[in-house]
Image 1 (cartoon, rainbow, N blue to C red):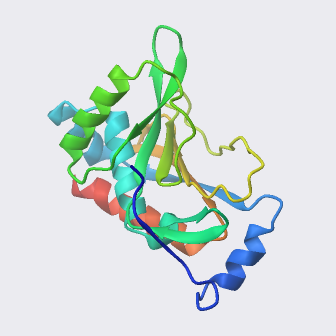
Image 2: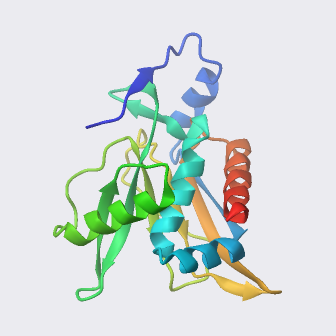
Length: 209
């Protein structure tokens, strides 16, 4: 069942002009990569016996949900704002070395989310269960490479405003564990300011653990 949303009146919306300009761009999405300190977070995840990948999905999507700009989408040509965005992530089948895309509702509690996500991922037999809805954040961990840049495939659908979140292999530096994280977002809704807000919220959350 899709999450609730409200339709935005473009005549009174402050961002209408910015949205229109970027919406007509050849490539309306932009991607930013940054490093985050996961020293405390990694320790907590290990102590609680949780999946690091699923805990990261939860942390990223929790912070993105708190920023309004990340919850805007295009639905049937209209601009809408969702109340809540759920999660979708890639999950590797170790035997076939092929990934499946798993869709899990967002739950505020980290442990409950990880338990549900593990169950759904393990029980899902199909690689793809159908087109993803508008109301998800897509997460793709890539734990084999400590990258400094990442790009994504482009479906050619300019109204696809689903943010993409990726992270690579973490590494140790000066006694800290650092990880590259990437955010791709539709410029009609998200500016560098909002990426900055996301980075700040995520690092704060990672530090609190």
